[in-house]
Image (cartoon, rainbow, N blue to C red; front, top):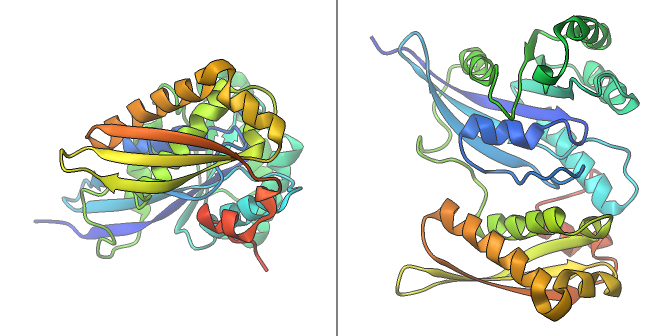
Length: 304
């Protein structure tokens, strides 16, 4: 006998660099959210859609919401990112609070935990990178975090190696409410291809350009043209906050921007399953991170 269908939202919240996007990609089995070693890479909520068979013969559609890292905002962009994170968790059936087990209870983690406790909801603790910490050190960390927040469940995982991730995903699936699927079962995300293309370009900026330049950069897909041969032409503009950043991104003889484009093109072609012709333009746009139009292009809105 076929069991019930379950469907619901599980929001992934935490401080910057806790491994939230890596965890989402591990859950989904493919790249949905860009990942770099730098903090504050994710700027908006990314939905990952995962189907899971249940022990009772039913199935579950897990709607995983990856959110920006929560930190003390300074710019308008920062405020919109933090608002997106809290909004992503606001309507979730389960909130997965991801904590870097190596760094432990930092002031940022403590602040988020206290706000989670105030807001309530079904809160699960996910200690990521637990494979890098001695087991004896994990128990005091778990105890300390549970003193801050009444977590319903606690899991120790490694998003990089996959250790503990399948068990966590199975438990999430079983805990979701009964209900119909909200998306077709073969969907992986609701992220438009245009936005995915821009994000892959921005990821390469983070990976290839050092220091603060990536934080002054945004990328937007200006044109997406389907071609008769089945390929697609994509035009992406990288906007920089300061003129000096433009020359860094272009590089000597255009070497840097070509490398960024080549890497992003390869990844995009792999994800959408067809050839991609990617063209990148770099433009000055001082103050873009304070512009309503630029924030809306990222799917961001400030809380009012």
